[in-house]
Image (tube, rainbow, N blue to C red; front, side, top):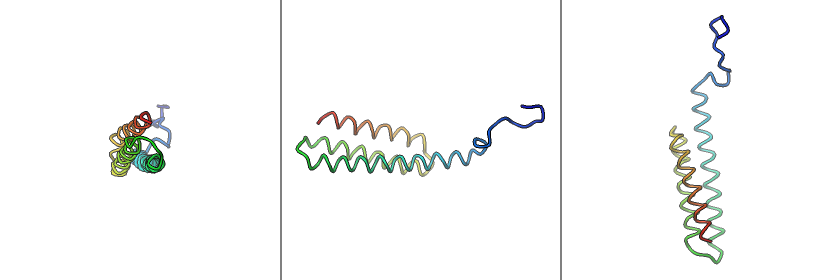
Length: 98
């Protein structure tokens, strides 16, 4: 407080609705990018000569990221964040089987 009753919160953090909208768009965009990356990796690994578990893991991780994108767009950003982490971990685990 500066003595005049004004709060010292910067203007960019003053609107919680703007923060929520930004979080929804971020979750949506991140989920979409990770979904596309997982599907592309799955398609590339499917054409190669490796175990079938690898493209399946990439596709499963991409599906989890797609679900996270949907949840994030509906305002469930915390759950979307955790699902994005799980989706990337599934893809990374699948890559270890190659």
